[in-house]
Length: 380
Image (cartoon, rainbow, N blue to C red; front, side, top):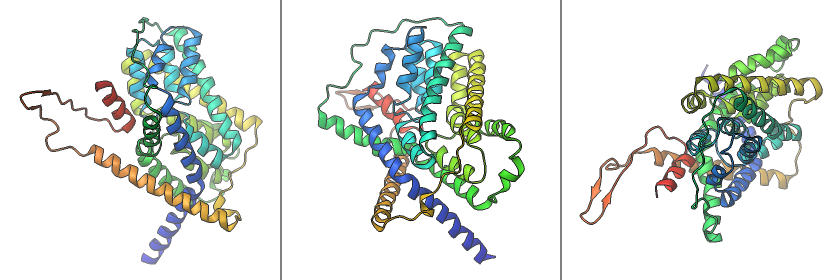
């Protein structure tokens, strides 16, 4: 019995390592590009462009949301800030719908693990669903429009290039990884378990004649769970390898990151119950439509894992190096996140030294490093 458990553990770790080998070069590239974007894009600039209840405002919020390096939890406080700053309901929902579906890192990783069709289809679906959702919300939901305040201190682009480079690399290889390391690790565990314990033909034999039912089954699984755009990819690879259709996998890739308990609660609080219901319906319907399109008009087979292909020795060494680097970055990010969550002995005390008053503000429940840095920059 012990030997069997050890054998399964070895196979399980082998599956996880194979996934890391496959995803590391693309995710590292995505982290680097996300860092570059963060050097030149100040998220506060968005406030200038999406305040009106017009189509152009919806279009801008969707286009700006897709490449901005925000994790799926980081989009929540930003969306609340946009709304408080004067953004219309439609623009806010467009941003909430489009942003978590994609990111620079997830687009690169999607290309590497699922191929060019998925890599193009994901941002396209995010764009269309974001614009469509914003138009529907503005058409059917009452909205009290607030004018955006004039912002004279929006951009930090005048910082020296070296300072911006340091900030960008820090974001790309520390802040962003610290936001995704836990859900990514959870996604790897789920993907390895699917690959190891579900028979290769189980899903194909039981659901091959019910592809449409599979779309709705995947939607039901995706709506309540929290999974970020990057962490969903290894799970999607494992599901496709077991016979899940490309359309059903896309439903998971789209609805999973776009909806979770936190985002649903925030939509209800900042936009109202009616808008929340419309938000859920729009996400669900557009995910099903795009999944149906993939299954009906495109033929996509299971992705081929690089661990099962023949590669040159130099490529193997490079892949090993990148994977080790990738793991080290994630470990460093995890300990950075852990350190940031540990309370300091006197962090809740106000310090008065006679010459200067210090006000300490404690914010509970914030787990996103990007959100933490955004709050700090706003305060200081």
